[in-house]
Image (cartoon, rainbow, N blue to C red):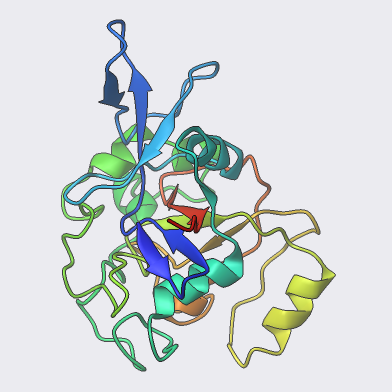
Length: 234
């Protein structure tokens, strides 16, 4: 894990899920399949893996805990994303096309041509995460990093954090100087950060991209996670 300011640690890559097979060995769960109810998963962070999508905040937190970690808070996640100097993007002040896996076509429109009004089932179609040229392997965008050594925190997949929508959070994002499109939301909703491979800056630039419109049990093809951990003194 990456040590952040001596206060906490964060995984350098978006998570994959692992489960135990019949022999007790830990194997990678297919990134395009929903977690199976009743199965214990742990989170792993490695380069050149296709990260897990279709995962809820509740399931993400459980996988982190099974690895003796936890989800990052919103503040921790932003610190890990912005790197030293606290710039809006991991690599600098301005967004640069191609550095991170962003701004691609929206797969629902490509996958379901001519359809209007997509359903929850459409958003969770397993083939969406298997379309070539969209979801990237962890660390594949080598320039989508910062001086701290975290990768893919902007784009590729949205990432759940542990913070919840409340009045304090709403107040802070209203005065942070960032323009975001309106989002329908209620207090208690979960939060995911960073955007995914089809977003630009609709909900904030780079590390400030903040989605607050969904409950903690929500999941779709665009959302993954990474873990943090409290720093343990040697």
